[in-house]
Length: 329
Image (cartoon, rainbow, N blue to C red):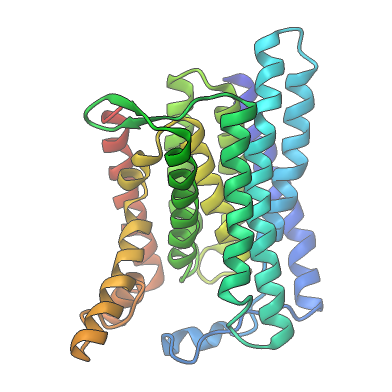
């Protein structure tokens, strides 16, 4: 517990310091946010706010991750050494997703539009990271293909040929959900911090040190970044950050064999995704909209809620969902 606390503090400090260096560089290079014309009109004033802030997360996770790896690996305790080795796929997958988001962000900036990578290319990149992580944990770490079922407090074992596609689906769905949640200042970061805290607590309960250490890195990274990301944001995370956070979330859940728990503790990102699906299908069928705008946080924004109110309420809902999630295991 003492080491994990140090990791959280070190990550906060590192994220804060890296932000102080990176944000001015992003400003100097004019790497600014490009708002969609069809988005909320109030967001047009955010045009030009430094984006691609997920780079701060990548750098922080790399630096603190290396420190945590060598600290654990130098231990005489074999369990500590093993936890250091098990950190590698968690860090690699998260940064892998972040790099895909970085390429997407760069493409948007170079093309001076909000389209980014072609969906097919983006999907190929996400698939490569997802399949790579799934094979790593099942074939090299040998953690098995068990899936824990919340509330029923039992597990089922999937055949490997079903587990790999299922794990890939979980990672793709989670990264997309967090990406959709990242629509107003501080929302995705705040929700992710609460979810990472919940998963880290589960890691403590089950004695998975690699999860508690990695969770500590993510919690600290998000908290440090949040100082610059709360409304009015001084920096946006971009796809670099949202894909990284979603990938980290899914990786931790799969590692703990609890991907189904994400349906509970990550209910807000799930609802954000469902709102888009429902809106599109209903509009195609009837020509009418159910929500004023999707993802659903924009519906509340256009209903008169300010950004801080949305972040506060969505974060509180996430906290309640995490408490329920902890009770379900």
